[in-house]
Length: 244
Image (cartoon, rainbow, N blue to C red; front, side, top):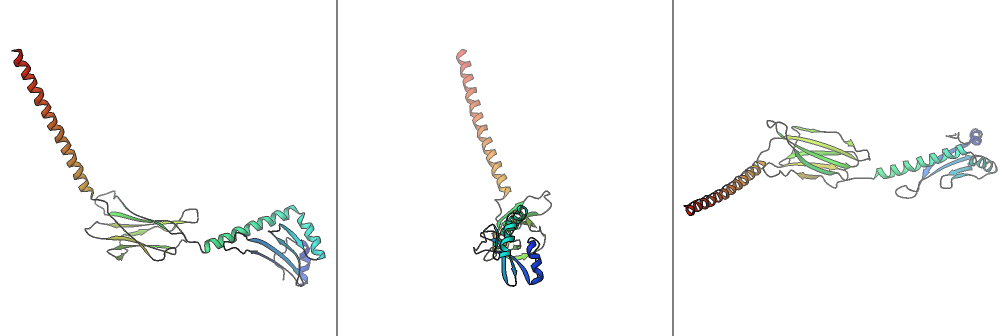
C-alpha cells in the first residue's frame, strides 16, 4: 500500500515492493505552537528517508535514501512545497487546539429603543457581543416567566475575528411593577446569566421639572424687572419735583 508518494519519485518504485508513506503533524505543547510536519518513507519495514520541518530538509537513512535525499534537498520547487505544507500543518494544529477548548464570554447589553409611532408598544433589545463558540441562547422573562410573544431574534452573526454577536427584540407595553429580564445561556458561563431591565426615570416627570424650573426662572426675571421699573419711576418723579 502506498499513499501520497508523488513528491518522492524514487520511492514510487518501492511502493510495488511493500513500501509505504506516512505524513503527519506532531507537537508536544498544549497549544500546538511547536507543531512540525513529518514525512516518512518505508521499504520492507525499514525507514528509507524522512522530511522533518524542524530540521528543514530530507534525511536519508539507507544508501539509496541518502542519494534521493541529496537530490530532493537541491530541488528548489520541492523544498518550497515542503515549507508550504509545514506552515499549513502548524496553522491547522494551532487552530484546532485553540478553538476546540476556546471560550469567550459574551458581553451583554440590554437597552430600550424608542418606538417611531407612539401608538405602538416600546421595544427592548438584548444584545450579546464577542462570544465563542457560536451556540448561544437568549430568553426573555417577564416577572420570572419565559415569554415568546412579540419576540424576534437574529441568527448568530460573525464578527470576522472568530467571535459572534446576536440580538433579540421584545415588543412590550410598559406596566407598573412589571419586571422584564433577558437570560443568556452559553458554554463560557457556569450558569445562565440574568440581566434585569432598569427603566430610566420617567420622561414625563423630567419634562414637568424642566417646565417648573423655566417658570420659576421667568418669575424671577419678572420680579427683578418690576423692581427695576419701580426704582426708575421713583427716580424720575423725584427729579421732576426738584425742577419745579
